[in-house]
Length: 103
Image 1 (cartoon, rainbow, N blue to C red):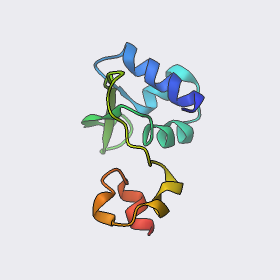
Image 2 (image 1 turned 60 degrees about the vertical axis):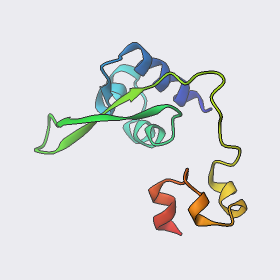
Image 3 (image 1 turned 90 degrees about the vertical axis):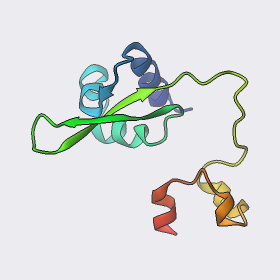
Image 4 (image 1 turned 180 degrees about the horizontal axis):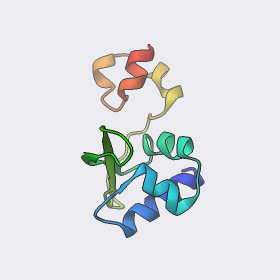
């Protein structure tokens, strides 16, 4: 796991109500592009709800983290290089939408 992933996970654990990416940037000082990219792949982090954005008339994602049990089964083949190992696309339930679109 990358170091920014650990920082983001630990921060979200301390804020069970969730945080917007902008709030994560303000607290950690990590570049907003790095935070937004990391949120897509941090293990156990997901969008809980959408709230009105401060600066525009748009919605902002509120991110939360779930504690994953130690004995939780994990897929063996995850990541970009494992795509070639998956023969049947129907079996690739862990591929995110971006990868599907880029193929």
